[in-house]
Image (cartoon, rainbow over all chains, first blue to last red):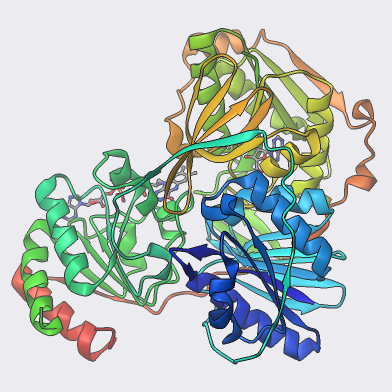
Length: 321
Length: 256
Ligand SMILES: Cc1cc2nc3c(=O)[nH]c(=O)nc-3n(C[C@H](O)[C@H](O)[C@H](O)COP(=O)(O)OP(=O)(O)OC[C@H]3O[C@@H](n4cnc5c(N)ncnc54)[C@H](O)[C@@H]3O)c2cc1C
Ligand SMILES: Nc1ncnc2c1ncn2[C@@H]1O[C@H](COP(=O)(O)O)[C@@H](O)[C@H]1O
């Protein structure tokens, strides 16, 4: 069995989880093994119809109010309970900050092999073969794990989410809280962009070239007219102008939108590691030799403060806003 | 407050790199302290400067990796532990975590810090694995750490915001480089690091056997990232650049 853990946010299954479920469905059907999904949430039943459109034969659920917010110990406990009940040979999930938080502990407690943050994976005899970006995403490593249970986390945007309706059986697992020695005191949500970075079709990313409120306003306007999520480089997050949740790159998030605007970003490998798989990359930078131009589909050499106003105006006409 | 930081020696990922005979080949064989671990050392130093206690570091690696231990000692760590292991090709995060957890269990640190991931492999597994094996509660991806003397308050970068977590000692924290800017060792720090103690420990000392530590995962090959189609670069006056771009996005790339 392949079991896919589905992350939820704001009452919805995350798109990146549905991408993994869709790919797992094709692997399961090729291998002739069952596909199952797992949801851990205060109210998992609310997702059942949605999940059924993606074709699993069974949905394992754990319901408990504690899962309204993320905490590593309860999530690890819940997932190990589901895994002991379902006994899959492969566990797959989308790579998120929440799954990154638990993957190591989960693998260790189950004696499983783990392939984190892969950009693709296939079943092989006795395990899983996967492609993983390494060396700040400059190189692709082919990795293999052979074990009774292999855990795989998948970068968002690696696969398309495609439907294939089924009528899954629902198996509820009773949550047994363990000894919790960690306390969640508070969540400081960042008032970032309205659009989820991981799921955005368009990303407008700001770099250190954005120096003041005027620059930030231009970024906000460009994002609003293109319906984009706002991203940022590490250097501009450090100035405090953009929230850390917006950071794209090796330390930050990995995104793969259709259209990526790099505005005043030099193109350090650690930043590029998070955006290289964008379909079309637009770079605006006043330094004609900035490394970002090596990756840009369209590079505009010039002052962002002078280019953005006419660009926003033209885009407003195109989008009819 | 005594803190142990797990530090790894990694190749300098910013150096040019190529694939030769199926192996990675770097232009330089420069090895560096994993940037995330450097942030762990820095934060541990700041905490002990405020609350007393000392920072020690532990590294699993070959003889050459001793220079990385010296680097952390030059930053201000007190003592180093070098767990010697030569043929690392068979090791994965689980192998290192097994070794490190075995070592940690022989000690009694208030807190163990690791990096949130290795810069070269971006695995990000060892921290949680060590915590599980050593029976420690943990917080991952820390961007801030404070202490009241009995435990740690960790600000963790989560999916939609920052989660404030409270842990009592003993515990483990995996550190993001967004937490701080690691200090550059001073000349005095470098001089005094030469006199600091580095204990050499063998796998046998920890009752471990290299063969039994073989990873459950292995790399079978490397490939270059497929090159992107060459792009176009324009230099013109701003209004012209703007309309040229909009035209291309609409009619060539067809993305708007
Ligand atoms: C382990 C590690 C992990 C890292 N992780 C990340 C990560 O996740 N994300 C990340 O982004 N970085 C990361 N970094 C940092 C990275 O190496 C760079 O320092 C960072 O990306 C630089 O950000 P920047 O391009 O905004 O700033 P800079 O490199 O300072 O570039 C600013 C650019 O703006 C241009 N500019 C300035 N003014 C204007 C103007 N008026 N008009 C047009 N252009 C202008 C300049 O020409 C320059 O190219 C990491 C580093 C390390 C060591
Ligand atoms: N050989 C090692 N020696 C000491 N610490 C290590 C070693 N390997 C991994 N670690 C620690 O575990 C963290 C995560 O490693 P990884 O799972 O490889 O991403 C690193 O940032 C280090 O703190």
